[in-house]
Image (tube, rainbow, N blue to C red):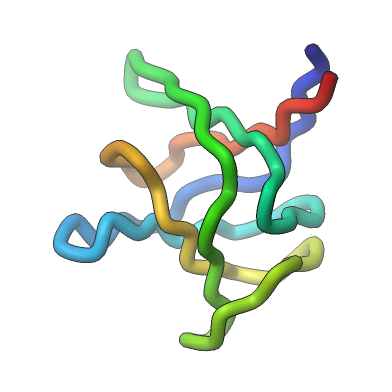
Length: 84
């Protein structure tokens, strides 16, 4: 499986389970991602993204999105897109 860096977490809203991600590549609902940092990592499928509080199906490079995450993330965690 190939991994491509697509962004970095800049903030995490614990009460929402949402990480704010500064994208360096595009990302879409249904993509498999891996989040790595602070001695831990996990994979999940992208199920919900928001851009300026509006639900989006796809986000582009250089956009800052809110990403629903399955586990807690921290600032500077790296987000990779996993492809087979």
